[in-house]
Image (tube, rainbow, N blue to C red; front, side):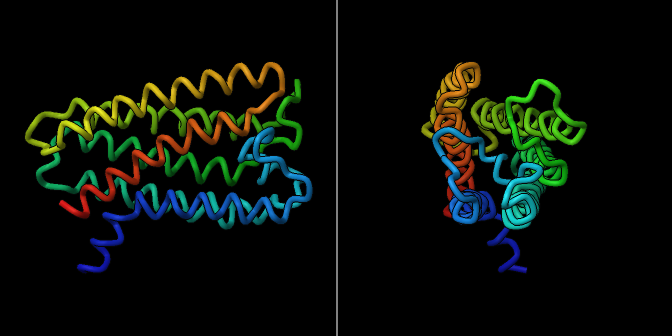
Length: 205
């Protein structure tokens, strides 16, 4: 039971390490894959060399880790409503990760006629993006009873600001088909670093 509790507490950090290693590993089996110009989801796109590999090593285990961490936040007796909502949002992020893995995007991310699977994938991705963008705000503005230190509250707000900034840069890059991969990764990994920080803070506290 103690081991499970430790794993649940650290699952936010584990998810960050896992996805970093998983994306790097999957890309090694995708000839010519460009991290700076291609979306992470292209690793699991329909018809890609890693269509089956990427969701198997990324989406499915990651969805479990996100849900586990979200559950851990919800069941904290001293957490309060705001932290519980953040936990629920992280669970939603995990479920979205599963859905995005099961329904692959089209190989051409800029297609004008996306398939049904691609549409579902895109909506799942949007829900994933929004859930992990909003979760830090609930932590930042949670009541004092939640025992979240001021420095982490400030970092939570900064996470949202920075992640949004790079998300806008990604949206602009989509129009020019430029470095979408770079801005997507920076925006997403900023949120993952926040998740890791929350995970570590709970473990050390």
